[in-house]
Image (cartoon, rainbow, N blue to C red; front, side, top):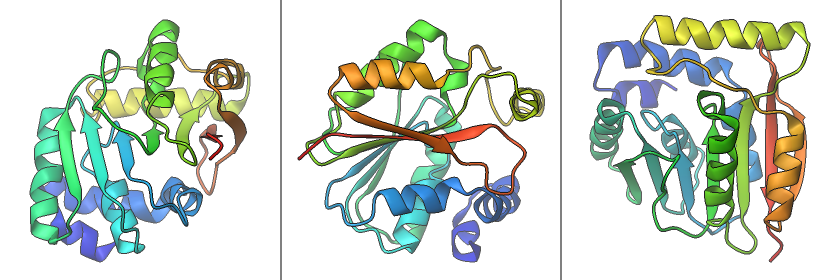
Length: 213
């Protein structure tokens, strides 16, 4: 965490990165799901690239492409990659609702689905599934819509991120587990959904959809 935080080019990110990496269980979970793969990774909604740098620190060797519509964050990620000296890291700006880079491998989508409408979520999931190679996985972390207290806290947290300008957009629609089963199942992937709360109060779940070799 200290090595990654020293790569950050913006003062705020130097404080944010170690706090995020130290408290959020998704980085360890994604690393475990990718263990043993030789396929590259496309990180959709990568932000400043924390997952990419975490994977490199964990010894992950395949290429990683980050993709995000926030151009300043992509600029920061690219500068961090240069400072890190790691090879095989690239970052691109784009809107995942309409297109994604040409790619085949593993795909990761963390914490962005709530900013899309239901129709946009389905379109994004199909775009992502089409980029999962045989033997690869689509790894998603998302808050799920239900009637729990955790869900209400999740909504409040997302609005706080919007009001503090960390996120550009406000939440629009939270997915439910049935969306992943129906959409990704129809794309030929085997889907697993499980809680990923860690020590957080949020209603986060891990969705892993694998394509058979």
